[in-house]
Amino acid sequence: MSPEKAPRAPRTRARIVRWAVLASVLAAITVIGYLHQTAGTGRPAGVDALCPFGGLETAYALVTSGFLLKRVAISGVILLVAALAVAVVFRRSFCGQICPLGFLQEMFGGLGRRVFKKRPVMPTWLDRPARYLKYVVLVVFIGLAWTTADLAIRPYDPWVAYMHLTSAEVFAEFSIGFAVLVAAVVGSFVYDRFFCKYLCPMGATLGLISKFSIFKVRRTTTTCIDCKACDIACPVNINVSEAETVNSPECINCNECVTACPVKDTLAMSTSGGKRLSALGTTVAVVAVFAIIVGGATVAGSFEWRTPSLAQEAGAGRGNGAGSEGADGDTALIGDFDVSLIKGRTTLTEVSEVTGIPASMFQRVLGVPESEQGLPLKDTKGTYGFSPEDVRTMVELYRVDPAAAEAYIPLGSSEE
Image 1 (cartoon, rainbow, N blue to C red):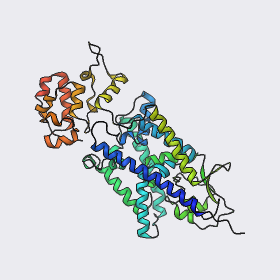
Image 2 (cartoon, rainbow, N blue to C red):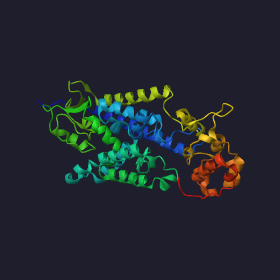
Image 3 (cartoon, rainbow, N blue to C red):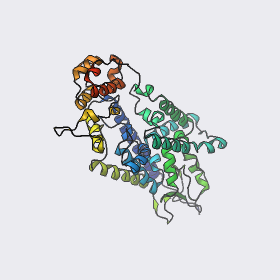
Image 4 (cartoon, one colour):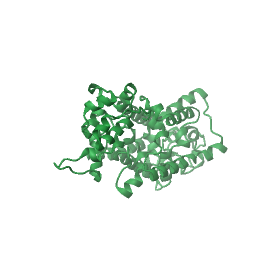
């Protein structure tokens, strides 16, 4: 008796829905990145608040001291929790069903398949050891983050570079990350999901957890016709046709193998007890878990969708015990203000409001007219020959001797 064919329509629908989810996430995050770089007050949060790996980098500081690393927002931790929750149930579904960088690679991989017709495969002698590189990257950058209390991976992160493509900072501060981004998409043009397979530390983290996931791709050997369609479809080159249960940490749970299988009920996401979930059901379930966690955090006011103002960031610092009360009961900002909060995105208007330094002094020392002090420092530094570090120095001087601040001569360094 010949095996029953799997209906084509449900398989096609599952693939379309997965691509639609991935495309929507990529489009949304791209718009957020653009608006973060170009919008003024109330602009969307930056990449550091919207990256789950940042949550992993700050985990040690959060557990041991109750504080987040600089730049990291609690929303990064929430996204990490969501990604881990999904991994416990559905393996590396964050990679295969949600990750915008993963989809960017997948698009270039699709173009590559059209060009090469038959997808090139990395030689086994090079592929196998190269897969361990992402675990090295994970250990190195987590170790650096936990020992230096800073986002060590930031200058090298291709996703941070992507989110700064519309900013001059992409070459000034993220040139290495931009190079890695180019390598990721060019590599994916030749070898599918190049960055995911060889360099992604987040993928390494989720891969370790996926060993213990509840749902995995399982193959019914009695109905398998050994057509190898699943092997050909797999973007991370797993030989699905040789396994009864796909336990490889490389599996990103994209379900491309499941939707490629021409035999009904031969490949499916299922538990060890036999409970099955369709490819479409998997995508819906993954999105639902993410939406519930992120949505709940948003309703609770814990998820950062907008960049806080300098005053809000300074206030958060005082809430962590950094502040002091003045004689009139108001918080003495200039005395305890952390000048490291002044970044390229900060405006002189914000600095003036928080520190009490008159706008007229910034005009005299830095040359920026009051009408332009509402612009981000990164947009004015080139015109007026100063850097954010000059502004930090002025604040430091002002808290000791306002006259010294007024006499300060900007150095005009190129940082930030």
